Length: 266
Image (tube, rainbow, N blue to C red; front, side):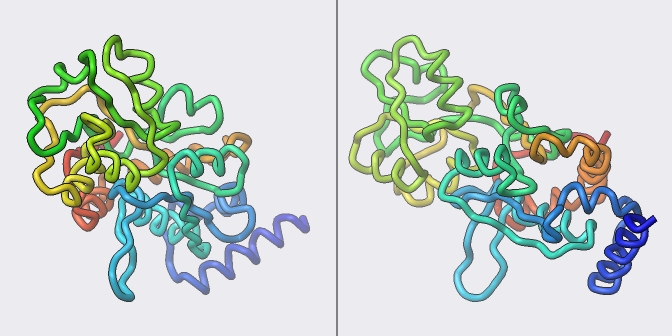
């Protein structure tokens, strides 16, 4: 009985603080499971519109992950606490350890061993960025002898291309900014990641281009730490709602994300 009373008081306080929330948050249990500290800690990393991009001045950051985290916190009725790491590998480690409550990232079988994923909220092509004057014109030409292809260390692109390449050398960069420096210096022949990030990088590398075509697809989904499976129905319903209500599409547009699509609502 005491637990029921405490849960009711938490819900009532949250409603008074946030105002009306979606019916999906009517049961207080998802709030207690997904945000056990009383705030929703969302793991994000800079340099890509799929996660978070800082803005000049006092405006809110933009990014699909940032916006969806903010909406998830609103529907749960808890404060939103973005936690920004230098790179996605650090975000994944924070989800695994429970240092953050949620992340918005590429859902892979390998990552699913360390965290639980909801259904995908966006799909995005994987491609290559090449520097000014490159003779490369299609993704199929990239795995060639003598070429050095950059990837983000510890990323899904790193895992996939390190396994699949037969001829080109995989070169790891700690961050996107370091990758840009490497391409500027001629240290890599191409860079591989999702096209949303590649287009952002291209703006900082005059004359560079994102090759037409793709070598794969990322499916981004909400990730939560293991042990919080009781909240997965809520995560699935939230994902379905933000897709069908156009919230994901609006976040994509606000972030200026290119090369992505929103999967049909389930």
